[in-house]
Length: 313
Length: 313
Image 1 (cartoon, chains in turn blue, cyan):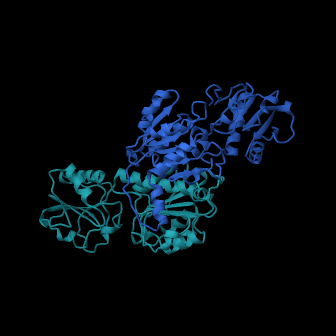
Image 2 (cartoon, chains in turn yellow, orange):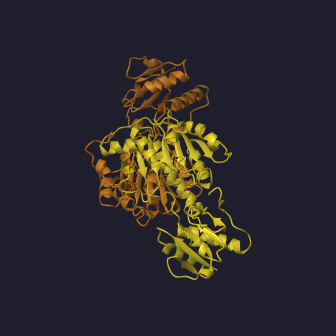
Image 3 (cartoon, chains in turn blue, red):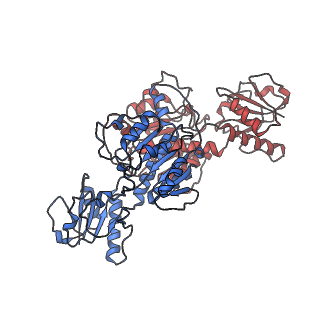
């Protein structure tokens, strides 16, 4: 009943430590070391080597160690086993913090005041109210709904868009291809929390940017993306920031990570870049989540937060 | 039954426009122009000329056009008339936005990520949770309580300090001189929303800064002041930022405003300066507030949010 950890680009020590502290009786092994393939029942993975999971004959459940699962579902040899997504209150709360921070920085004219301060100048500007600003959230899953809850409490007008229709109290929502244009036209600050799927790849392009509301109080639309980097066409985002079609942007995710040092985005105006840290996975909180799911599975209670392979999330 | 507007350093046009739009039958006059002193019943003031209010024989109520009233109570010739403070949901909401933004910028390591971005470098850092951070609010009036409500919803630990004891659900509170040291020792991020009184003048000095918690997750204490500038000893704040006793600070208010161009604060490290814009008075919302108070007064229902001259707020 061993647990395998297969993570790429992360230090697995924290995970081993957290799992062993919470489940001292389980064997926890690392994919980068020698291990008994037959013993593995559960795999905790982030960007695992293609074919690795297929090579485990007694594997029962795959846990994806992040909110998105595109790192996994793109493996053509992914075995036909349940894939469990991370849905953790701690991760959700961190994402909401990041989204709130970015919305408030643009809303409260951070770039203006930072430039004034750097010049040693006292330059007050008229400030519109939150009720004057329409924040549109794309992706109305757990993360999107929690961001909406927090933004609503601050008095922003909320809009929502998702693949399938959703009803959210106090939020005007649209769905699908035909709902995209009216949603964008009613949005001053666009927040994308979309998973990466065939439909969302390259969705945030020049056409989408040009469809955002232009008459809002910020003086132009703002893009905030903490979903997946490949949802955005980075050349289009860069161009729109430089010619003013975007008033500002905040990006935590990029098509290639780390963002290459020669990317023009590093010097694009009115852009806030964070290095994929909006919602870090906390090994202690997430190990508890994984172990409680395993306990439920072994007791015959089933698994929660299963990924729909067809939808890709 | 005329209304006098006497504001210094503001453009009064918005106020005249807002008042006339909402009360077309009232006469609204400007202190900077000729007017009939006998006709004035109500005065809307911000830093009025000393002696002006005393020269109005039929004045009944003074409205202070801001959350603080120190600009008014320092007039030695202030007549013995009711002074009404602005308590406006719009102003409160703007202040809460500003406080949240500043807390989140320090909590989410803004200075680190801004420096990394400026250098074109992808430098992720470990992020602690909101539940690991103790935010201490000084001043538990309308503004302080609303900031606490919003910060609690994000999962921060809350502490409170005020002149007289207050009980707030889920918040550990202290009061008075003897409560200050234990409050500070339990605070990682200090938020001051204090009014300016004899007791609060110069309160935020080196001794207070050195009393803040040093063992928090941010790596040192943070000061946020949106109360009044003269509550802080600016030389002490500057020195503490430069030698690292303060990990960071956000100041919206200063002893002298505009902050002089040669102030060393402009170049202090890890400091965010905004030019007294945390909570701007909105003429439309505040004119409605003033007119509803006048209507209540004339109907014999009395006045709300009266200033206690002895306390100074």
